Length: 455
Image 1: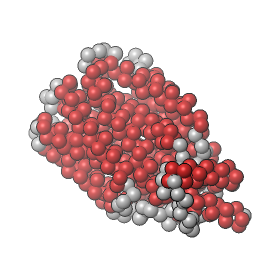
Image 2: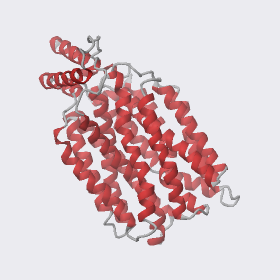
Image 3: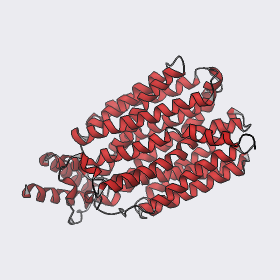
């Protein structure tokens, strides 16, 4: 056993010394494509709700269940696929996640009524949740430690391009065609099928292989990574530094519920819960809130389209900043700015200010999410990383599943005083402020070995 641990330590040190992404770039493209269509799908249902309310003659409270079912599906899919990822490998989990997502998205387009849509959104949500946790684990474990945040931000950043393009596609399809919302679901589902087949050449992560005792396979992948990096850098790699090997000793996932990981589970679940309530309300309910405020549906989509460019700006900023600033402080600052922007949107709701502050809010979301995905992955050891991500992110999605009921519920309390719009956005902002406070209690992780676990 001592020999194996010594070999693990050597291989991890060799991987972590590499200063660049040392694999085929198509791997980043394929992971990014998964994020793209998952995020594309998240926005799609929000864009469809105003049209469905008229087409099916339903209340906003009934249609909110299409969002709820999707987010409940996230939790189920994340946990099941997370367990599969930790036991059978990250590649297997990524195949399952994209399959569930593509099937659910295509079937959503066939829905004859809202309850069929609720059911298919549950299936689609299972795939999205599984993809997000699986892809986050995969990127964190493939990347050398000094570029972990950079690489995760690149993958997640592709998802925010999906956020950015949906309003423009929605503006072209939904107001003009009865079947426009169905076409949105089909687009995401069909292309996801293509991604499924393109992933067949992806390697397993060497860290997971080491944790399962498959040293020769891990060594082969790391040797190819070293050769690729040397060829691109056109110079020898730096000498390996000592790498802690605590995370490669296989343990039961139930140990996540014991110190020191229990506090990480509680803390990160709370951060994700409060942030997701406001975040998903912003992503899925704003078109409906704008329309109720008197902004026409085409104009509402235009406003969302302009503000969605912030997702691209934020994604680029995250790529350059994720490894430069301690992640807990960076995430807290970003969430604070996001909350302030939402307060301005709610209390000074002119079209131009909504565009400016909405742009800034979208920018902060595209920065916060990859930083927090990286931070969450760093908090857990290799033997329970995908499960830890799925539990904390999944609990967050349970809270987010009721974002419509929470925001619309608080808003209705102020209907008589005509402050319902302000109340809705203030509620979203408060959830962000609570996340800021919780982040202050998080551990420092930036630049440390991924295999240090929660230490």
